[in-house]
Amino acid sequence: VLIVATNDGVLQLDPRDEVSTSRRLAPFDGQLAGEVTRVAVDAHTIAVAGSDGVVLLSRRTGARQVLRAPIDLPGPVFDVLLQRDFAFFATASGLLRVRRSVDGLVL
Image: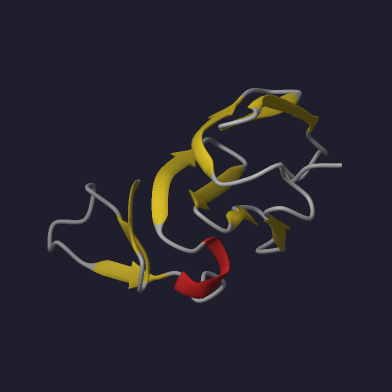
């Protein structure tokens, strides 16, 4: 899949479709992440990072998790790396490593 994020929303495109169709991912609200800076996707999770934090969506269950700056994160998120056991969030204050749960969200 191809994930496209703007400040207004997130679209999912499936390049395997013969007709290019997109699907708006309803759990994402442009206001939650602020100005979008990065999108990361793996087999379990879609992460949209921005000036106000990160929105995570479990691709299997559809569960959504919001990490807000500066409450849950030290500030705006500039990059995201999703690995099997951890998610890494790059901020101006440094790199934050957070353990991931089975559904791909963070603990």
